[in-house]
Image (cartoon, rainbow over all chains, first blue to last red; front, side):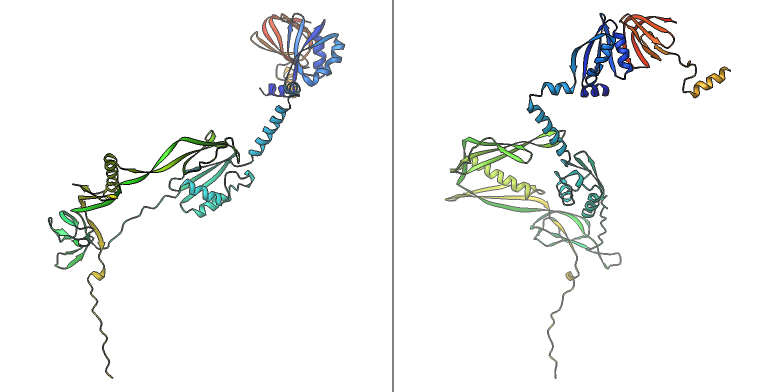
Length: 406
Length: 88
């Protein structure tokens, strides 16, 4: 294959050896150090191949051997170039291609980060950029030894990292530190207090002394389970109280819905602006102006992907749709849907952990708006742990200044 | 005496068993023959190839014979060889 490639690059010719003693010509040529290959006899004529540069040199040997040479065919790059000599564009294109390829291959085009689980890739790219590794920088400026060192110093979570250059791709490999698990060694004393007003349903105390009973009403901040228990000797002992206290609580959600609202009505016509992206140039090929009135714009950017590498070639498209703001009043169906959506969001985000029993919806009509009120009765755990402080027991007496008799 | 000759040939870089200043033939079945020590091609057709060696002429007969590659000292012949003749 390599021999064929070399022969093609330098060019070779097929020729016929016509005469009485073609073998003699072969012997003379070979003895003079000129290589001839694929010599095939056919009807008293020998077909052979020879390097294009040697073809002119064998004419004296042909004369000496009394044979005639006839050129049959030409192959290789020199003949291809001479055949297309008039087509200057191909040559310029080839030269430009080689120049662009050789120039672009001297830059970093892709940075692959591998091994990061807790560190975000965006943050990692920012730190790498600060430490001298960015897309588009020169390959010779990449310091593969100092970048990992600087980055490891900057990000504590990294145990080990390396930067490996493979052509124009920088592969960054990271090994994160194993996080030491936190051990809960809290020996403090806790009370359980109510985080909300409600009626107690059940008290399930795992530790501590319950001070309320099911059926009793409690207010926010009231002591539910005490962290002070009696020991065997009749003394007091501080413990970390822990309990699940289920209570019936109430929530009210109020909001208003305007009878008339502003709604955007879009035009049918979509104005689209396109531009071709080539390297760092954006070349527009549609000249459409922005709409004079308010408009909604959508921007789309596409790049050519080759082997998961985003190339600096592609297009951008901006679609603009003009709209008018119109006042629209809600009908019954739309209103119900809107109210349901609002309440559903409230239930999900505010009453997520509660068991909702009976939502009661009340809508009052105003001149301009609807007032919506929804009352929820829920069952939930209202226990919250609160540390026992020394100030819970010590009462500081009022110190009145005493007069010193002189 | 024979041992002494063999030793002297080995010193000259020749394989044991090869005669000094004589052609060396190596055949792969009857399809290919490698000839070392040739002095030129005397006749070249698809049926007959005659090779000049130093002291004799070797004739290969067969069908579809051709010289695969050729150099001043060696050549390789391909084809269906049916007969080899030595003319001293």
